[in-house]
Image (cartoon, rainbow, N blue to C red; front, side, top):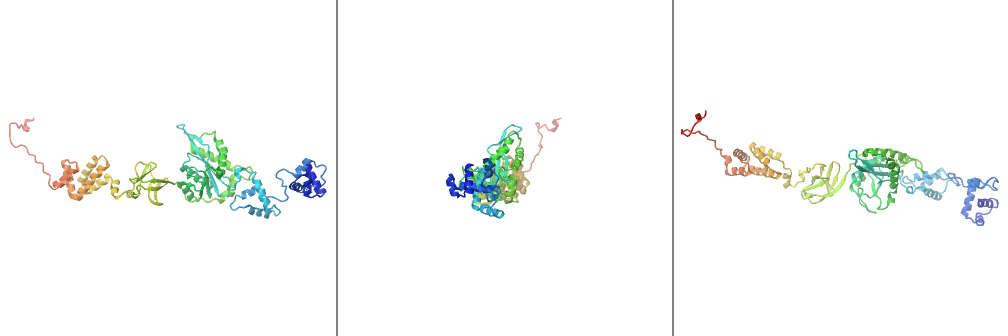
Length: 504
């Protein structure tokens, strides 16, 4: 305080210049200027009051934080920081608005310097400025939550998905069983519904459900994940490999979820995934309503004020999970999906095709064009479309015994009975197919009337082979009347013939 008194005496009493005062007392001109500026702001005059001790003089010149020492007014830097998150905001525009309210306010250069100095007091993850409604960051928390099976006692680990909006820090979390593609896609759908809108960009990690090939410049997004982005009109932007700063926002959100949600649930025992998600949602409300320490409001208030108005509205149609796969059609014109067998057009045999798989439909795409589709089935019976078969194979592929018996009935009842006899003795499909085909060739060669007559004669004599029917047709026996049975009793008497009278 001694040098401050000397500065005030030389300046106010002796009228010395700041340069001479600085040189005399061994101070810089900036320090001298600062002391004199503070004295003017505090209304001090020379000589100082005898009752003013060093402590009181220090309080006047260096008051506690929150008291404005500057000659010109300054804005509320927390408000400026929030306004910078809005799309299109610049420090120059905000400075002009500030001068419109405070014409005597600080200049633009000092305005920028003071704002950057104020930013240094924030935490590291808050330094990056995020535009409202522009980005959402998603990731998985490291810790999992064990859920025991009430019947077997087996403990199954639930994964914790975390999403956060960049500007407001509005946070979403949920639990699901795995990090596989269906759970990953479903979590995004529920997150967008929780936000009530869609951000312009979704920043994710390089897990396999999101990125098929990681790259700093040209990452390859999983087709199903890209389909989700197209449905919600958003952009998927994976973080660069081994660059966690690209998604520092969600890294911090994961830490907050672990501290304020998972830690508080560590002693609870859950019996189902739905029960765990119910508990997470309750604590998520408390987390989003918790007040910031260095910024005004809470995550929810900032979300409602900044992020929510800037989000893209949700599409009217509900998103249907779609998965894309590449398969090669086999030589038999079939392919397998999750244990089910499906047919493809015979022209695609041994060719690669793309599959668009939903919960109910499997579509076959070739060169970007839809060529066929099947209803998804869990049955072991192959799903075969007759139109997919080669014309030579179509009949056999769709062959059935009932249809052959219906054809035989149009020829005659005896033909149907004979064919039914053949089909009953057939052990495999091919035997019945060949038997029916042989009868059809006979019908074409000899006519339906002769075939019916030949089958009638074969049944009468107990013949059960196709060669017997053909032999009857070749020899013309079907055109001859069958011999009548001629039984005559002996009309002669002989001592060895005892006759009916013998028995009594």
